[in-house]
Figure 1 (tube, rainbow, N blue to C red):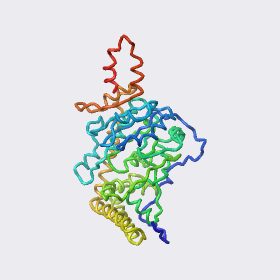
Figure 2: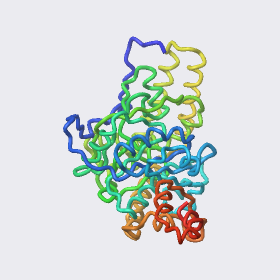
Figure 3: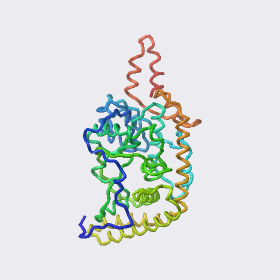
Figure 4: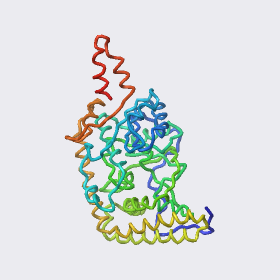
Length: 405
């Protein structure tokens, strides 16, 4: 890309929210045990190798949640090192999971704003499983994230004594929405916030959930009655590169979640509260958002770059702008009201779950009543169980194998 002589800053956008975070830069930061690493995945099992390395180094279970045509639990169990304490679970039907019926999901279902990914459901499934198994300090990792130093996860876990969530600083390819990527490409001052791609959470300390919307991880670290929960950043994670402008549909799918999250954090940056996100605020913020995207479009048109790159970027920005036209102040206000109710619904769900369960018992209850049970594979536990079968009970081994796998 060519470089502009004038920086593309604009009063209609906050390119950083990092001042809201407590930064732990001291390498002597207290460390704690990680109870589990949880990876929602839709890519080939080869992408899980780094998570397996981390789990081995930290001596903790690795939970992989599989969906899509490129991956499944059985293949992951076959390809990952046998030394890993792996729990690989197929999540083929999010609607069949034992999760609450969220009002935020119902209000978007069947509309242009309905989300077509299952990452929120997988993350909520990870929280549910952790609560049932008594895992307190868990780490969510995306399957395209690499953590060079495993001790960064231990440091993040240590900070959960005083914080509800601790993110790793994302290096490598920036972690932003399509619109913010375009802003950076025209030399806008744009940074990344913490997110679910590399996030340590206290499963009982943080009673939040991941709504089914883009920026679900930003909503997870919010408190509906106040603002941002106690959160921190430490260590480094590396994001694999990808092309944010490959398909304009990505920008369309992100726009509502980006508007809602950026609109809330706009208030938090000024020391205000979520309760200030009323209809007047959203009327003003939607106008700001429209000016911001138009400003980036204008900067892209004047940026020296290859014609193909420019065309894809323009198409993505126009797609976001087109979707923005359908977002109203009432929709934003009503979504936040539904989200606040869903937080209470989630806490009721968590409070009703059985605790101190065995993995087998917990897994049997993760599907809704009347829905097919989840399929899962745990190779190391299978080997241990098989080894424990007495020779005179060898005829029980096939049944035991079926029960565990």
